[in-house]
Amino acid sequence: QCRFIFPDNLLGISWVDSSWIPILNNGSVLDYFSERSNPFYDRTCNNEVVKMQRMTLDHLNQMVGVEYILLHAQEPILFIIRKQQRQSPTQVMPLADYYIIAGVIYQAPDLGSVINSRVLTAVHGIQSAFEEAMSYCRYHPSKGYWWHFKDEEEREKTKPKAKKKEEPSSIFQRQRVDALLLDLRQKFPPKFVQQKPGEKPVPVDQIKKEPEPVPEAVKTEEKETVKNAQSAGAKGPPEKRMRLQ
Picture 1 (spheres, rainbow, N blue to C red):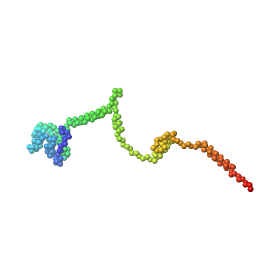
Picture 2 (cartoon, rainbow, N blue to C red; picture 1 turned 180 degrees about the vertical axis):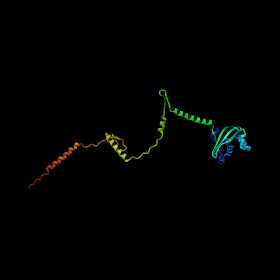
Picture 3 (spheres, rainbow, N blue to C red; picture 1 turned 45 degrees about the vertical axis):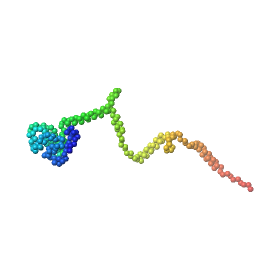
Picture 4 (cartoon, rainbow, N blue to C red; picture 1 turned 30 degrees about the vertical axis):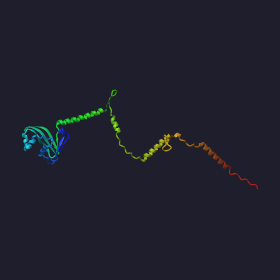
């Protein structure tokens, strides 16, 4: 099973054969790495020649060319295999390293690839920062350059705000509010009155008031009724005349 991320770059390839995972150890890891479906394995290497001639891996020291060796092992989870160019029994030149983690084979990146990736990441971040900064820059011949950040303010305004739950008012608050409203009504009486629900408010000055009795006329009428009653009481009842027989 081989998963390709970047077909042209071996650094983006991983390969695994699940049937080998339970039996991976120091003796079988090179056989696992030499599977034909493994894209990291070079079939023209000396390991393939030794395998076809049924010789031991000790004969690799006597050959010249590309070979694979087990560089480090931490059973059963980690194995490191090195690809190297042998020029003599005592002189070799490393070409690439491969690490096997839980049966999955990856190619270890070289120093140039690591530096290149880090530099590209840093340059991309700096370029994005400059582009964002330039989007807030404004220029006018009379004013010069300045920064304009109203876009962020408008975005914050358009964001839906979470509605706060309204708590019921207490008796003290309602009574206090009623007292304040009554005080304001007395200080500032209304200028418009709505006589019936649904009708338009009418100014207070235009409302027809029923004529009230003049207080002086009422007082004079009361005085006259009181005098008549007093005079009638002073005279007393009329005397009876004697009948002549």
